[in-house]
Image 1 (cartoon, rainbow, N blue to C red):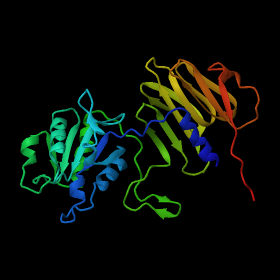
Image 2: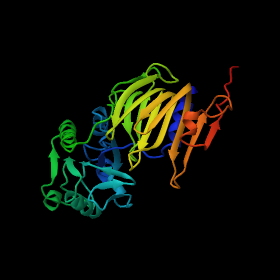
Image 3: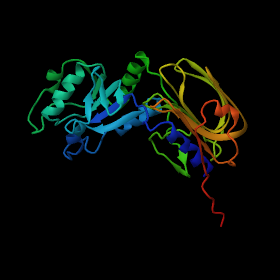
Image 4: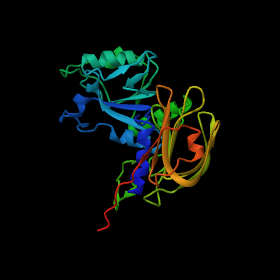
Length: 310
């Protein structure tokens, strides 16, 4: 319960999804065609392998193009909601319709690096069709899943995309192995779409392991002493716009310095109206420490959930 309540501190600083620089887009028609050897294969192996390399990937059907959910932004990148993709894998696009062809024609001329696994030699009516002739030579063909992962990782590295903590494969959780697929780590760091840096430590204790370290994020040096979770986001002015931590004892970065007499679960963020609001979790309803009142006087104290010891 202590671990879960510490993790909920993240909700007070960001609602953004995990930043995934890669989109694996599988041909919906092909994946559902039982006459094909690729039937029911949606590219999960590629997405999993990329996560295991530290490059989280979103996995989605090509039918999102028809729904207009998947689109290109004004800068020429493929995007889904707030997520912008630096690389796109077109996985078994056989039987793709004219809308998909038109979309990927635009993508091929855009800024997202494109890769392809599988042929596209038939249209939606299963008539012979040379889609690659229409798409041109900007889509890099890959012999198989392994070659695709290697090519995507190489492209991301050359583009300066920094990997996050790699997802472990065959991780044993709750007494069971995760099989051949990668699963999110319980120790390491990741990034959210809005630029929030998240550090998690829970490999040994359910309520969180110590996080006593110094790291750099977006050109800022951060020193922190906390337990279980730390998250922070910088604003355009270089100052901390949001911060959360479990069992915080101290943090220091730029103009922000906090040193507390007792470890505290807390979170605060700069709202759109320019006002900073924060929450404290647990503890007696005592006076807010001076170090926190210097940040804002608007603190709300959250009660810890009651534990049933019966």
